[in-house]
Length: 238
Image 1 (cartoon, rainbow, N blue to C red):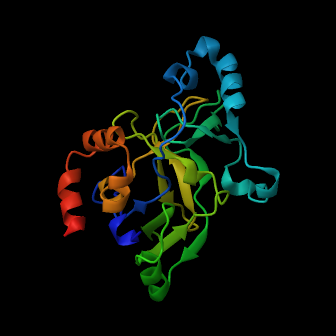
Image 2 (image 1 turned 90 degrees about the vertical axis):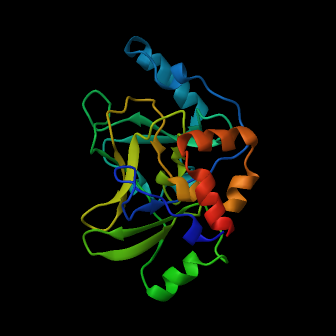
């Protein structure tokens, strides 16, 4: 699957240089209700216990990456609230005193093998590399193009954030920090227990093979979220 056809525009600026490939839509699992994930404040404690019961942390053999979540932040991998999306990423506790996360708060990282050499970038962009977990962007602090491959299942928490499509607005973003790390950052106030969503961008979904493999319902949701998807699909087919 060619990375060249998997570009994503940054949620803050659809014309930005950031592209992210953190996850994909699967075709299994049942839907969880929104009330279970975004509970009223009066039932927050009970709801968080329910979410803990339906989510999983990184297994013992993957705990050598504690920096995958930021200090005073607890993230969990669990069943997504999006029907058919498989796993998702949840904020169990944010860095604020009340457990929330505010816009600009750093929640976790997007980690994996990093490529910056021109020959490596060309290889990772080729059709011989098949992965839904490649992040390519220009580091604004160094003006260097970087590709991060988070294909290994427990490379980081950030790879589990889904695209909310037409159902959930993006509440987080991937971006570089001053040290060149790719950080999962809150875009708005996020309550404890809420699922974290990114915007993958139209180019991610415009990959012909990916799009045609999805169920009709998911294709319809993509069209609602990205109304110009058909034009991009024709472009990739050409």
